[in-house]
Image 1 (tube, protein in one colour):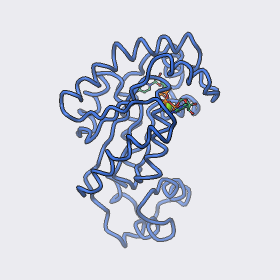
Image 2 (cartoon, helix red, strand yellow):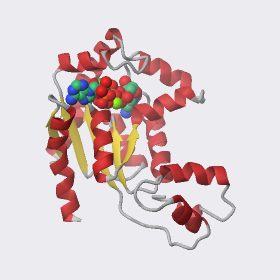
Image 3 (tube, helix red, strand yellow):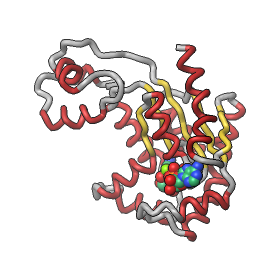
Length: 235
Ligand SMILES: Nc1ncnc2c1ncn2[C@@H]1O[C@H](COP(=O)(O)OP(=O)(O)OP(=O)(O)O)[C@@H](O)[C@H]1O
Ligand SMILES: Nc1ccn([C@H]2C[C@H](O)[C@@H](COP(=O)(O)O)O2)c(=O)n1
Ligand SMILES: [Mg+2]
């Protein structure tokens, strides 16, 4: 795990081991890595996290490209939207509030989202994270820096025309409560007002990589690939 390997002990339950094993990405297999770490045989792997924020409007293709980045470069994919939808499904204390916020196309309070991301990072054996759909606001950004205490190495921005985003979202067909014209319009307004300032912030910091998010999924990935390939070469 990125931070909490040391807390694993031989008394760790098998269901916890199974859950943790399913999170293993690039490092070790279930039978060797987890079991040996649980027994304290292998020292925890301490690596500086490599963090990529993945930004872009609704339907710009963030999730689609994250899958390809994971396959090619071995990142752990943390989608803020997926984590929030999981909270709704689990009927947690914040579930109803999150559902209403998402239906309205608004942004969930940062503390809630950052805590969910933090938990996933701590549970991961990977040190390379793709944080998809986050930060959506300046408040998100500041909250992440305050709670997690790190800044991103890379910020990807999938720049897509609005009419293409609307078309993709309306065709998505995944049963999402926010995939309807009324909510999409609100999400686009929120994106312009609250998310673009974050994108500009990272542009000024020299961390922003803008991808022209039109064309086929493979064509778009060919713009993404060299960004991560360059970091792999550096080490
Ligand atoms: N290059 C592309 N051309 C056409 N359709 C695409 C392309 N990339 C993704 N799609 C489709 O568009 C829809 C939206 O893509 P995706 O879910 O990746 O967007 P997103 O940026 O993650 O959106 P959201 O912010 O709403 O989660 C999906 O149905 C996906 O299959
Ligand atoms: N940082 C975030 C990310 C997402 N949400 C909420 C609001 C979004 O409309 C919704 C869906 O996210 P997506 O799957 O499109 O990335 O989740 C948020 O409040 N804060
Ligand atoms: Mg998505």
